[in-house]
Length: 333
Image (tube, rainbow, N blue to C red):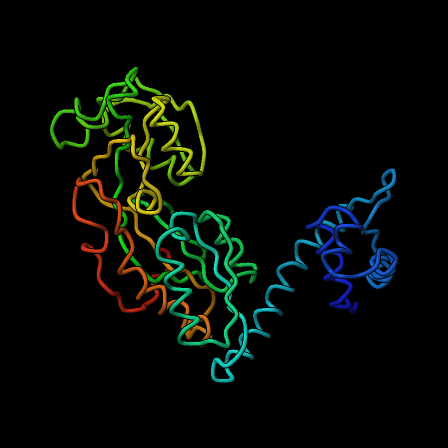
């Protein structure tokens, strides 16, 4: 069986866009052209890939399977094309990065600026994604580098994922200022002991974040002897701070989030204990393609300025506690 790559790309676009019209718009094809390619792909594979439903179509189980595998195949083909271009002295080509929001709001723009200055022919594509999604995109070949974070309790990454340590990002307890009231304020928390600080809010509502951040919060509260009552869940650190400032709850945020945005009506205190570790992740056997290696090097240099501007007076800035690391792979760490 031979599958035409162009037709496979049409099927993947249909799976992603949801309708023939949207897939045609994404690919800059006419709708009849999309329908023709799908019909030819069904003939090539001998499988029913799409099913008409009302005025639209939906993928069959076979169609969904092929689209899923096709996305991985196309990602690898695109990556191979980019790597080949990158080998021509980094004069041209494309490199793609997925990163979590607070990284995009702090050191990633500086890395992008440095990369553009040093390699003006490279086309950098940025995408926002939390670590699990960023790693999925990396494994599928849809991005070349993923900026991710890991807490102490985070499980090992999949085989083939290589991690370059960028920086350590401490956690801060975020509570409303005295004006918000209704909740205990940070000034009433006793001492610098982790259990004392977190336990002061055992009866308050909590605001949780993404999957990895939520697990970290639950672990912190468990160590302090209680289970938090999570009233809100959002990945948006701006929204988290706004809700805290309004007295709707308390939260734990990494310093990067407070460096990217700091609400004037919240109080913070750095929590003792291990910080989350931020990494640049690549996939596959070393060495990395030149464009990928250049991006990782730019991230390593740019992170030296990360964390400046938190301005909370609760401890040293993030940049004072990290140093430029040698880009060595750390499998499953």
